[in-house]
Image (cartoon, rainbow, N blue to C red; front, side):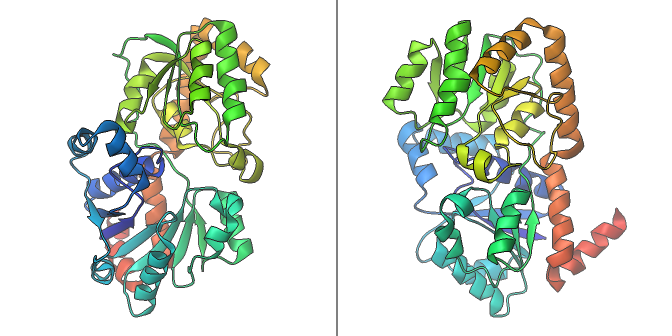
Length: 376
């Protein structure tokens, strides 16, 4: 089948975590013999910032790293009706311009034989509810929400015809342990500062514990204001700026522990939705300690796959304990990897997507799914 993904960007992961997941899903679809194409707008905040900061070499590096991925940039004169008519499945991400969301829905309503899905991987349904409420989703065959609480928000508000929970996951062909990499640091955190949604939490669960323990720490990410950079520096933390997501596995492998610091809107209003870095870190086999986060859907085994610190003092104590206990680190790595491999790879998510299509897909899709299901 031909899958078409409308996304803010496939090429750029600069402050754009959805690119991580979409790359993994597309790669698995291609491995299974499907065709997958991403469409991204000519004006892309993420890609524009990436090029401004890193230069065109970052785009070239993406092409080298992911030769199996195809992305096409569209402008104002792009024929979207022709593009979707040629596809079997069209998935539209929630950062797509509202007018285009409606236009693609109209193409489906006006006789399009493709299956049309809307994909939400953000907290705007609770933090900027009007943005989502204003989208015209009545012509979409289904909505993919990256957490059960988000799915319930859509259902309660009457957004979309049918809503499915479709969590993010790790591309385990890329995110895997790298035992050959030498350990050079104690702790690494890969995350963006951005929007003041977790600035206090970063200070409490990262900066202060590190300062107290005098650890060798690296922080990678973007959108750190000067006062944040000063706080990192004062604590002896090395700030490395942006890191390409494909380079994260090696960065994880060179450190002994990492942390999870979720954004406040998820903790307070959308429990059960972790950052994608939890999936990726555990897939890489690095011990993880999380700031308070309610795994409402039982995605993991808290206390076994990762540890939880209820406050900064406990984070300090747990970091010290994990770094001093090699057996504990090994247990966390083994358990976390087991859960990822059993439930949370992009292969699992593609299986789930195909099952969803079997429920809400058009005749064109269900007819093509049937032979595959029979073969399996």
